[in-house]
Image (spheres, helix red, strand yellow):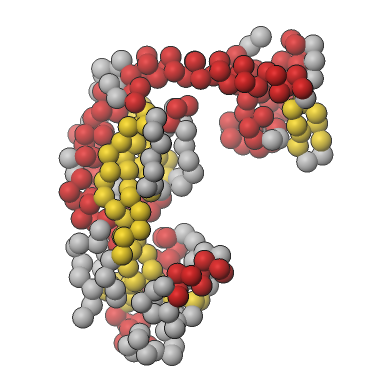
Length: 295
């Protein structure tokens, strides 16, 4: 029995189809199919029932699943402990963070870190998806969360605040927003969600225009004069053309997270300390303390 075959079996069981598993692992679905067939040959039994819309585990597959998961957990634990003993300030460091953090908040800090530690190969994955630090999909994560997982160690960097922003040109054209009949919100979220946040906003009488669920797209839409936008202060404050229309409102904690088994890894420790030393700056940016609202 080959461990790589078991790893592909686990990926396929999690994903529900070979194509989905192939996308996650970045291999061809024929490779996964071939390796699972090899595993089934080793056990002399079928592990999946193939269907037109995917597949499901057979009784044999159900029995194998917890065994394979336990083997994976043990192997990953050994790997983390070995990597945790790494004392060299060199090698690859994988960091994951939401895209808007990279664009409006963390960019200068990441560049400064790379200049300070040229032997560390920093790989940044700008993603909102939940990376599994236990499986070393990343070494360090920066995430919005009020409840960080207990198996991770972390430091709160601040509380993400949001406010309404617009351009001076838009405000001159559409007049005071409290009475404006022509101003619009740049929309985001499903219809029911849009209704809720508009109703609780400072300008509940304004309708929305469009739907822009990506913060950088919201920023560009507001810059282009589509309307005013409700966005993170660290993004809105970074745009010189914007004026802030409301006081910052707290939304969610922001955490710097890593797995406890990697706490002694030199490059992970160096990155964590580097970011924590800049916590005052990050907290100020997150809370919108750099730009006052328009009077």
